[in-house]
Length: 473
Image 1: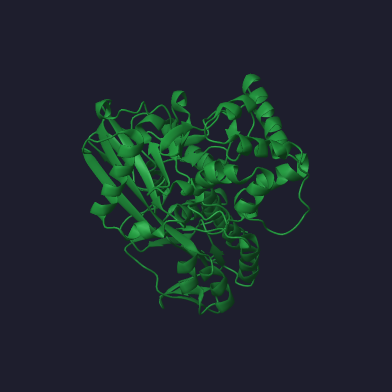
Image 2: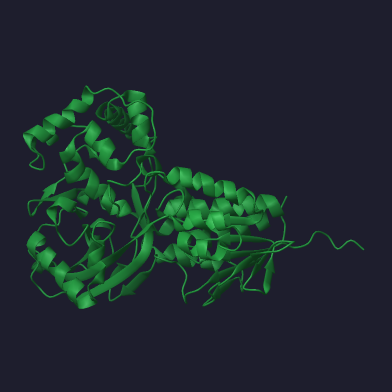
């Protein structure tokens, strides 16, 4: 008697947002295609979410990791809507939408119309104290310079200094990009991190002209009603843990196995074997690249070598709360970035309770500092007391805060941020080539196609869909 097709067994290794997205999408595909699945999600720690972790205490919403995601990358927003979490989404408080840059020990507003690395309005640039007159004139040369010849990968340093000059790199591009990638601009691949700027130069020749055009198009879209519904940055009213918990609730009972680190992955005649006993047809490895390399060394040494060669940076997030009356600075923005040339013990600071509503009781402010990264790894060697003291000193000098915090938290993230050095895209292509010879195995995570939450979700869902096409056809 025909008993029907065999139920596929699939394992997801890693319970961060990439692994959770993969597991959730596999469940969705199983239901959409009316094909049962036996699924396991194996997480070594005692909690899900990876670097996403929210603490709610005494009216404060404290993020130990990221505090938001981009709405213009749709994967996170679409997943939130499918999970029924759209009513919990919140945007930034637009009345405070301003970023400061530390220059000579003071906070100066980033000039209006400055988009990541280039100006789109001349008057705010001309009146800004962030740049010298020679630096402003050098940025203006972008309007006259020819486009580059098509060539190989280019670093952020090379691109920005070539188009806009050294001051634009040191005082704006490096700190803004450093806040995203915690990276060394002398090694960061522009093609792997910000390919749109390469396309702007190719299409328009001038970066400034290309940004002018994009800004006009965005303004037109906002006036004719076709603009974005959401603000650029989004979170949830109860913090990003809301997304993790929402996915976990949708997974069938028994799928999640916490406190189960995977030590060994083997290829068998029929599929895969985990730790010598769990046989499965497909596997999504949603670990840092170095963790995946450790599992795959015996399976495919060349693949493992490519993965382990992806470097990582470590960082820490220091959060503390003080009474609003004890902060002399008006805090009229989302926060500030710190150029490396300022030689300070932090990468950036966020005024969390100004950026998003409901992050702190009305009489308090919640502040976050970002520490470490590729350019300042030595700061992660400080113990908690020393690190907190250094950050308090920085906030006293920059914001005038002398009062003792009423609460403080330190979250350390060792080797959590992959570094997309020059040649990263070629490495990812080689990884994909090796994976093509290993049916039933997919990789997911922030080491390949983007480091943000939407990128990780897209990575996990793509891995799930590829396995779904293999097993649910």
